Amino acid sequence: MSQLNAILLRISAAGLLVVMSALVHEALKQATLGQAIFWRSLWSLPVIVMYARVLGPLRHSLKTNQPFGHVLRGLMGLVAMALHFLCLAHLNISYATSLGFLAPILVLPLAAVFLAEKITKMVLFASFLGFSGVLMISFAELDTGDMPIASFIGIAAGLGFALTMAFTRVFVKQLSVKDSAALIALSFSVITMLGGLATLPFGWGALGDEAHRYLMFAGLLGGLGHVISNEAVKRSDISVLGPFDYTAIIWALAIDVMVFGFVPNRLGLFGIFVIAFAALSLAVKQVRSA
Image 1 (cartoon, rainbow, N blue to C red):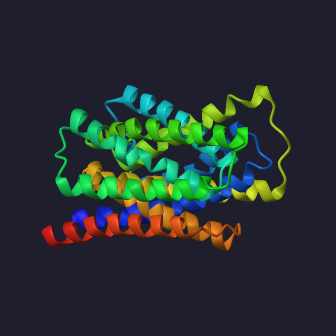
Image 2 (cartoon, rainbow, N blue to C red):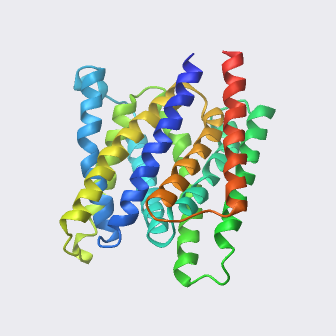
């Protein structure tokens, strides 16, 4: 059952993080990249601290013997967040989300090399089937002729985000062996908050109440999604959880349609079906073997 619980946690985290991405997408119309990183990280702290208190006394939840690992993971997370936000600033939610799906594919060989995890044929099938669905959606998004420079920047940032996240997930798995998910999330948020604050001398613009609300809710949902995602990793191999990240595209396209008025074409819809089938096929396999 722990495997099934991990899968459900991962799907829930995917939905929360997509909503967070939509809020950041809107906030970046007014906020600088550094401002978005700072406020998103700051508002995630209350959720993480509350979660740590639920687990027990803070002195136990926040204790670690590997501080350097947390610093390194936090710095990698800072780079990943900056690249993801840069991607969101230039692309719609569904396309930015689809680029992030390269991370579960890239993490498979990393998990085998660094964590000695077993990569089954079913995991490979589900992962590459999901990735093919991502490609379909990508081609559907690009089927509009020449792209402006902003789109190229967004695509490059999205690819960099995927690569950075692949390494970050391996670090999270290593840290979660001895440390709590709350500590991993807290160290990440503190380091990214300080990283965002470091951009203050380069100029922060005045934010309206609406942008502040977007970033506040982005932080709260992001913190919750971060903790849930870490808990999922602690209950299962990251190579198994990878395909379930693809379900986020369903959340992303739903938001694009209902909030931003973006309607996918037939190729995009078929990509959604392929991604959902990849995730569900692995879920059924895990339930039967549990």
